[in-house]
Length: 372
Image (cartoon, rainbow, N blue to C red; front, side):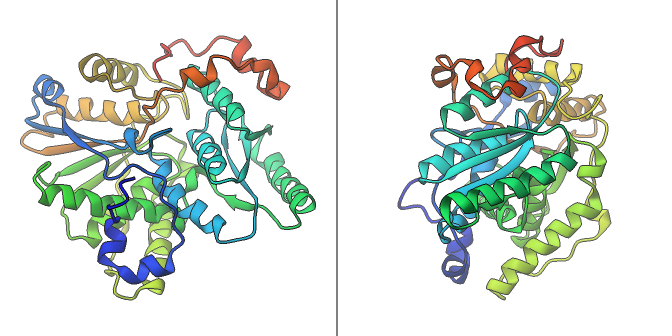
């Protein structure tokens, strides 16, 4: 991050800078680019991409913004270890491992099974490289017991309990990272980097990115509508849950600084697009693979079949239905684009816990071409 750059949240609300835990990890602001060639193909004059894939020099994506606040909070404590969770290919767990190590913290990743993909292999190997302790659990019930076990082990080792970060970093403190991102976007609009978007397309997993953008966009007075594209089952991400997360985040901000804008949300504000999930979480879809292939060929940008490619495919669908004509559309890329191949090339998967070996010994899903 440019040392001269102050994040908009702290610039506009100096009291929050004094109150909120924060550590600078990200390279901000992330660029906005016009996807002119793809826009012409889709009949969209104003199609843009927000390059959060470049949010970190070592590892980008949407998790870095959240970790600035979450790991900043851990640094305020005496804890030496952070515990987080996800599925086997969790981008969040990997990001946590990378930036925790950077800050001198140990990390533990509690991971559940998922359908196989090339990126799962890469993330597991990279997590090994960054010294994360990887633990496999068959389901959420067994994982819950594992969390307790890891907390006890951490207490015995360090004399203090580890600190916990929920899946995706999607708790009020983490969501603040995307409230700030919305303020950053407004700065870029004012600076003429792009017109004010009518619509922002973003994948919806643990909900933190969408919740933060929705709250931040309303708080800064933009009329932009966020279109979250569901990439996970509804029981894990519903409008009711997202409304609660938005409300909790706003309450935290206003508790720390009553000057923070108070905005109101209803269920009508929380439209979630449900038709891009396919067979389920981490199952690639043909439309997503096609969309990812097009953006790779046209721009060199790599999308992920579990998350970002599904969100981008929704733009193709809506353009085909002619409902985006005349609109300014922004695709918020949440996937890391930093190359990890050099660090993973020399790692033997046999060094991983044996429960993860099958990801390297069995085929990936048929639609996975190994691009993300």
